[in-house]
Length: 135
Image (cartoon, rainbow, N blue to C red):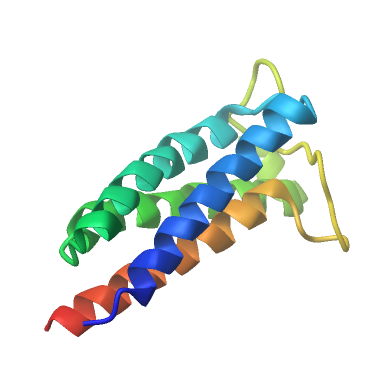
């Protein structure tokens, strides 16, 4: 059984975590409520996937998949909140930084929630591949 999906998932979680810390600690971007939820779902993946890769535990997907799928939902909604003006009427971020705000907008569509969404999607795909390899 190959460990590439596990390694890719772990490296991606590390990159996503370091990226979020760079945005908040170096660039001083204040995270909104949904950004915090995405962090809560991503940060443990660094530890879980790192330990699983070290021990070659290919059953880790049962613990990672719920976090990554929930992360996809949160970041997908957050991205939609930024890009679909009609959804701003349902915005739940009422204090501090608005969740519809965009600190970055590369190429007119790449925002922080999109980067998180892509990371969660790739991690989810890696976990599904690992689950299929075990069967």
